[in-house]
Image 1 (cartoon, one colour):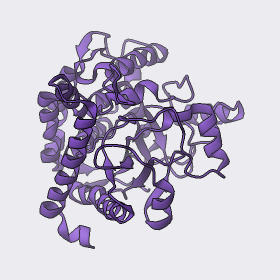
Image 2 (cartoon, rainbow, N blue to C red):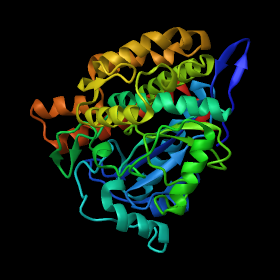
Image 3 (cartoon, rainbow, N blue to C red):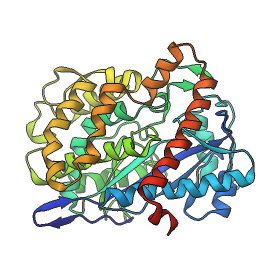
Length: 391
């Protein structure tokens, strides 16, 4: 994935591509694994160590219209394939909502790295999520962006939380996925320069804290084909699976607008405008991540600039208003606007918990979510991108 920005007439548009991890299963919400067969029979999909989820990646696009169709087209292929196997479909959510987290189902029993994953992390890694990649080619500007988004990553988790259930139980967390996911290595600094990132990465590999350059499982990381040396994009990894494409595009638009702001303002850097040192900033952010995983939009966080308490929903609203003119100037404000709907009506986790509190059981909630997801995707395919989907 190569990301290059477009700058036409002073209007900056960044390229963006996503990695989508998604579960497969039955219409009643039971998760059933077909990753090995999907990867064998369908192009564009890659297997995860556990057979119950599978991943696909879009090409990077500056256009949101094209990105929308790149999100939908693989799902159309996957749904058609699953129907050939039986009465199977795509399952929303970021955890094994109806189970089974006790057992690990290997997708490739002969893969030694998968053996390491199973033995080290077990089903803590059997989650579904969205990784958002935004192109920034200048390595020092990328590091500045990484610093800012690392501290604001809890806000994107708050918007995306979709995992309040595990093994048929309410867990008490809006993002059970991020509560249990094994962030690796345990201590990741706020990178002060590209050289800092290179030296730190090489040290982690030598000391065995990372198995390879990809084994950096943190909320946001620098990415590129020649890591840690050749970098060309920011990868936001904290988000739960946002199953609704329009809401996903809104979160991507919020991130892109914030990054354009970073690119255009050299002083929008926590190292320059925060009253705290890098270690303090990471401590604040770790606590914010935990709070956002627990309460998402209703979490009380502490701002990285001055440590003042602020509700996640209010902080997101502030950033939204700050970057809205940037999105308008760059021509994608219509894709940003659904953020207001999420803030008003709640994310997926909040909506599911409201259904649970109204008397529905988790199986009923998941069955309804599966059907609603399929219907919404079909509607989008029919209305918005039939030519591209047929290509």
